Length: 218
Image (cartoon, rainbow, N blue to C red):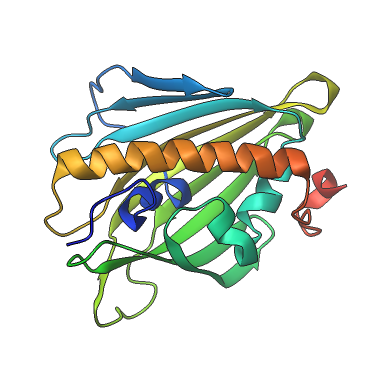
């Protein structure tokens, strides 16, 4: 049986979908801080899987985050374990429907995730990007586990001299009977690695900035 690693697809479930809040939520607990990226976690009862929050400061404008997230041809550079990412629909400049297939170690089934995102602009060309699962947007594929619970929020705030602060709150239930302690460990590592990779891609500026996102695309 293949050993779980930080590159396994269950951990990758984090970056594409984002956080949910419940009443009387516990406090965030710091897990890791390195290279300008900070990771917190907290329980998300009644299930065993943790919610995560990440934060970083980046030497790039907020719109550079959209450039990375929408560059689906290069998804493997920032989304560990992703086998496929493709745009299903782009109903408006503020909305996307995306299909993602994520690798899982044998004997677990690969996961597939359909998410809708909605963009809301803030002052200074910052934005929030809310993402949630729409599991019934496509018929299920045989041999794949459809993720039904995944939600969260990206926030990109403009700072001085072309810098940005990027944060993400995210929660995903991978489905099936995967053990929480294994998924949580792998997911935390994958989330941190993904955020670090996104930071590097934003600062490198290699992904094309979308041209249909309003005045902040220039």
